[in-house]
Amino acid sequence: MKNHLIISFIIISLLIVGCSNVNDINDANKVNKFAKEGSSTDIKQIKDTYSTENSELNYSIDLQVAKIYHNISSDQSSEATRIIGKIEEQEITAKELEIRALKHQASGSKNPYKNAWDDMKLNIYEQQLAKEYNINVDKIVQDNIDYTRKELEEDDKVNEIQKTLINAYGVSEDEYWNVIVFNGIKRLILHNTISEYLNTNNIKAIDVNSIKNEVSDSLYYSKIYKN
Image (cartoon, rainbow, N blue to C red; front, side, top):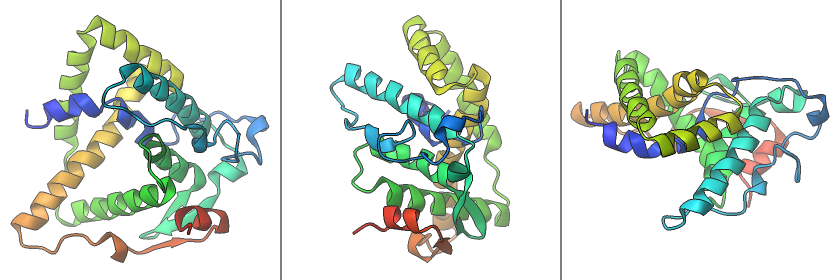
């Protein structure tokens, strides 16, 4: 299949861009500490960035990301679940943005929150276009996941590493593949499909800056639009 080769290389990184309501657990110790400096949900704990030459460093970062992802996604405090803004009338919570910003922090972004917010703007707008143009990529996504899962599971060493990471994320293997990986892969394939559709039909490309959005939370406004 067309996308199988690239999918195999991005599976692990997609763990950190998935659905924030997996394995929700209420932890009273996190109340009023969500995303604060030095807390278990602080993405700034990640100081290193992924390397093209150091696999041991990358694995160490993967494990750190996994733990923070789990802490964020399982936090049900009012701080974590509060609405911080809207994109195309869709409400966005603090924990949703933190999870998306986590990927960019681990990749060395200088402004992970702005990058994450722009990603979410694009993703949500592309979902609207998919409905308008009757585009459905679910089968392509599932075919890619089935293929990749089979390939990875046949390699004992890779399979062992992957299971360790999945455990660190605090989800089952089925939740990992059917929710987190599915949603992450879908965003990628939908983006490529929408871009190709617009180009083929001579429709103007998406201008991220023109997508309707509002950041109503003062703390996250400063994080996104920091000077």
